[in-house]
Amino acid sequence: MTLLLIGSGGREHAICAALAKKPAVTKLYAIPGNGGMAEIAECVPGIKATEIEKICDWAADKSIDFAVPAADDPLCLGAVDALEAMGIPCFGPDRAAAQIEGSKVFSKDLMRKYGIPTADYEVFGGARAALAYLDAYETYPVVVKADGLALGKGVIIAQSREEAQAAVREIMEQGKFGASGSRVVIEEFLTGPEVSVLSFTDGRTVVPMVSSMDHKRARDNDEGLNTGGMGVIAPNPFYTPEIAARCMNEIFIPTIAAMQKEGKPFKGCLYFGLMLTPGGPKVIEYNCRFGDPECQAILPLLETDLLEIFRACREERLAGLEIQWKDGHACCVVLASGGYPEKYAAGFPITFGETGGAYVYHAGTKRLEDGTIVTAGGRVLNVVALGESLPEAVERAYEAAGKIAFEGAFCRGDIGRRAMEAGGSG
Image (tube, rainbow, N blue to C red):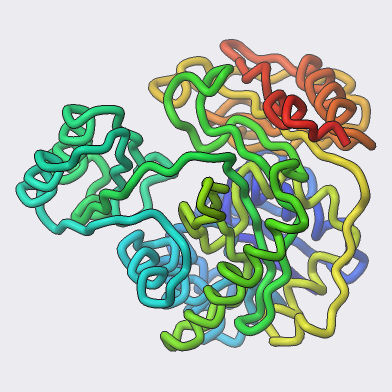
């Protein structure tokens, strides 16, 4: 089979790596790809993941048998719709279903309508009304969210009224996120352990993957600015079998049913970002694709053929497929460019030492003509290791990360610490 994967980050590299080792895959393309993906796929750097028409024109000449638009932007722009219209089967939601991530207002209203537990909220289409609401709001912190996609940076946890109002002005008046900030959601701040649960779904059946714990803040002890994710451990020790059963009954199945009832059946990977509050699990957010870097920690634990799962989701036969996972734990450590998530320089050569069997997924890299790999983004590399216990996986991941170097490189030093302190040592 000839496969096309659309995207350029660590998530896409992890998916590429899982697909490339399957005998059924005879040719693998990546648009645009990155420096690491170039080792296992033919990259097409001249086309952006968001250039849907160009992707379709290119695919028409390549006899693509199956496509995986893996990033949020192409999914929300209708990549699946366009490719399927050409007769190319895809893994992923169509444009209508991708709204579950593409619009915070849509997802929050969906949860309210169908009684899916989430934070209380209000929606505003103008800064004046949002600022007036905050003037009367009493309980801080509060969460301010841009409605549309914002590279994972459109959510602001405001500690005070002044911070919340500044966030509204920045989003709605100064246009920090462009059209994505034309509406804002202001919602209550929830407390409790966070859990990421990615799931495979064919629109009717939903099969959760191994749970995980992301680390969003840039610095140790959950300090610094929010990022796209600085590391992950899986499974998440706070996500007990009892909580998993409750989430299935109260959140996962009702969400899939709600999308069916709305005429927007969701096929693909549906990500549930959860908060385990004192009042029970609640949805923080949905994503319409694999989480990043959760995907990088989870896929190495997968035993079942990933391509077969993708095809089963697309063909609505997931209920008949048994998905198996390895025992043990995974830890992903993100190596980032100095200054991330704010301003940072790029173009620094990367040296790779012996990483002892760890998975090294490229996120923000570029391969030069002479073969040199250089930095080309904020989050540069994802170093993933497995272990029979969580401490073992964490130790192996940090040991491997220490064998890689580039100018300005930094990582958090406490990935997995909270989970281990909670008794998640495995």
